[in-house]
Length: 100
Image (tube, rainbow, N blue to C red; front, side, top):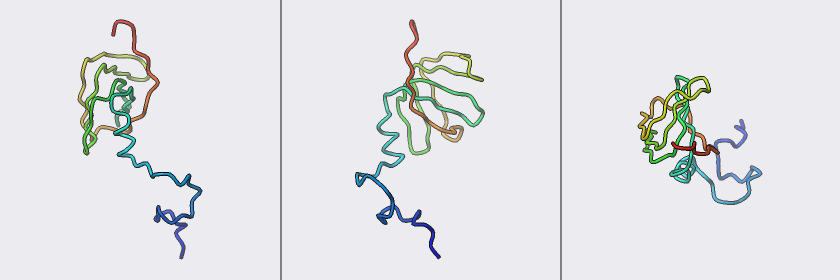
């Protein structure tokens, strides 16, 4: 009969910190302007600065680098990625290349 309480985020049964709940939307807002890695469904990675994104996960990036199989293939000034191609977005501890 019980579902384990997983479907009731405010049930108080978890071991939460009691702080404010952080949603994926909050995370995406907090990383704007920071280095990110965007992985596409095709397996290609794009690394750069997150300029903006919308509710469809369309992404605009700056100082973008394209990686295929872990190897740098191309550099772009600005890039736009259509949201339906995105597998995930991750924060990155990327350092800017000299002369980029």
